[in-house]
Image (cartoon, rainbow, N blue to C red):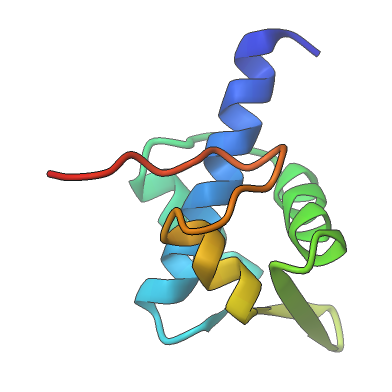
Length: 99
């Protein structure tokens, strides 16, 4: 994987956490996919987003529940701390500070 691809992946993971914080802590993967597109991550295959969600779960930043084939993702307290820049996790972009 190139450095640019790694950068995009880490930014996408941060965007997922930020989206979850903005929409009261949970969303299904379809909503997250639309939100990522609105933030400039366009044409990302659904399975790549699922890999990012799995990464967030494996690193304690999110949990999930399946309802049939619909996945709902929930942010954890750790995920909020990462989204706010109070905690760093390798593989997730650190948010910039300020306006």
